[in-house]
Image 1 (cartoon, one colour):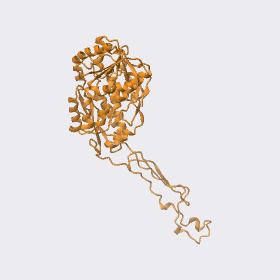
Image 2 (cartoon, one colour):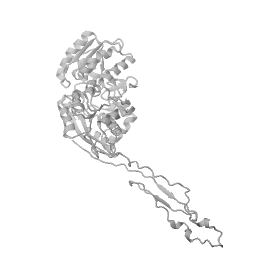
Image 3 (tube, one colour):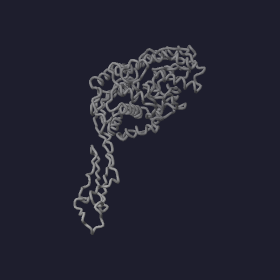
Image 4 (cartoon, one colour):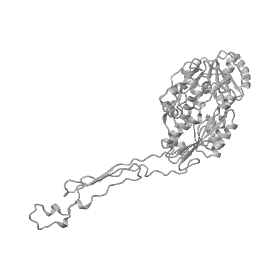
Length: 494
């Protein structure tokens, strides 16, 4: 675990004040005070003029006749108030609420956050990922250092604790959860758990009552969550409806004979698929569940031999995959099924494993926000690229479309981790100087519409923030290793 306490204090700009005095008997001169301080904690005001500048009325001779000046011209002369004294500018720090240890993981000077990351060594061992996402800790740390360099969170230094986990099951993920919520006390966990390990997100938001950014949400998991939970992606139930809506609007849905194949990791979405399809006038010709856990490629391929024959027997011309994407792509290709493949989870097409080839994925249609290349090129991602690559000038900055097999996919971590840290900073600042779970939830509820790096349409008031949708298709000719290309307009699905 790594912690990086770096504190940068905002300086206070003080106003320049001037006091002017004019005297009736003076020769047009005035004394003025002019003092400036960049670091003072209160405003300095110049001393008042000395009384010696005025004529003493006690020395005036009332018997004098040689002077044209009358007694009233020189007696008890007072400064003219021709210009009002300027009011002091308010000190922006003067009435601020003092920083306190307002919640677990929040001290007067620091905010402690846990960060979870995929263990790509474990994925490579099982042939599920040919390459990783580069120096994940380095990418995250660059964004945390940037926040701290700009003053942190209301003056608090963000202190990270890093852990990697294997996504193949919940055991290792739960150990990481315990480490970040019990061994060290954190206010927020960033990243959560993905893949088959996503069932362990309840360890964070329910069992250990800790705020979470990331993970994968379902309605059932959200109902059991005690702590606030935000994800920069889209709730799967809403994603399925948006997918079918886009397919319908682009005239791809009507007249289709659709086989729905679910996975045990997404069984809750599989269970509502037929009802959701009915809203668009579609009825599946087959509903079947792949009950083999992800990661067991041999058993998955064997199961798909049976599923493929069931699909063939129904005469289906389309297969909707809900989870276990790569097993489905391999099974359909191996059986030679002449079908169009629809994939609910775009990540399954964006991260092909060692056992799944670009030929297996060719032509598959999915719903996504922006493709990797679109995210990389978006103006909102430019700052993310600049911040990280300023700390790692030797790392390749090549476009996602130019990625070659075996190269680390740094752009993946830049995209996701910058997005995670941007929503963290937004919510942490909006939660107030002394944040609690209640003020954090209020900040989330009142976000309104906004833009995230690589996500042009997003909104608060709900746990899943992204409202950006488009249809994309896997094209083997896109880049050096194949990739997703847009096949529809980008819409605001809020």
